[in-house]
Image (spheres, rainbow, N blue to C red):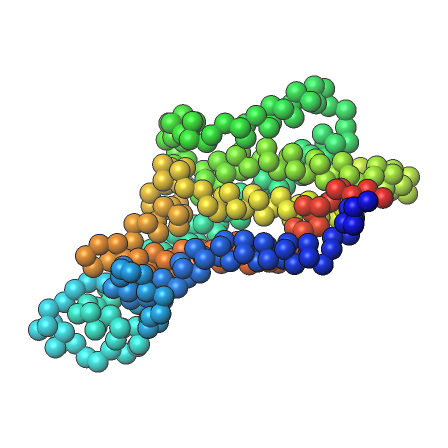
Length: 313
């Protein structure tokens, strides 16, 4: 007879599992921690070989990220007064002055508008479509569901040229509306499939009881189904936001100025003599924050949403 329980892991098994999880977490976090650390390095430390683990922290990367700088001659520097702020002093030490703000703030704001706007539309339309597929008798339901899923199988870059030509004709190139509609179309199939699974798990008896009490179908959907599907909505919103937030190919192809997002802008940050790696790392670090914060705020719903329906009593 085996001494190991198939339901309760032994203490040794728990230790091994804990060590493996901790090792995986460390390996996964090393690149992220390196990016964050590079944002606080000087340009020389960022490209040093062998790489520097211990270094003197500097905010030069963040200053370079948010400012546009120009070089001045010693004679011109002599005519200028003392710098008023610490970041002006930091720039002056390199023989440069701040010419104005950079475009990173605008690009970051574009990412927020497009990312969260497309996420809202994807979840809103996906919830309605998923409810219809789950509760009503839709002709050719299985075929339609497979067609919706098949749009997710196709690599987005395969339709890049037709979309580019269509957007140029419609005047949607380099616009917030155009990017929101595009990301919504790409994310909608994922939202419908995820949310349909969650809504299928909600007993129909809840809605039937609400209808007997005098609620309309729409009122039952708002007051009964949506609260029960909150976990699925939160999980779907996170996945949709991650795609829209990180998308690069369409952002490069369809935007260049007004609606350009942060992913295609960050690699173009140029410093004195080449790529400004501390500024690039600083931009990448700040770019991570909204998704991390959004995920942390919904972490309870995300955990419950992933396991929802996995165990039946």
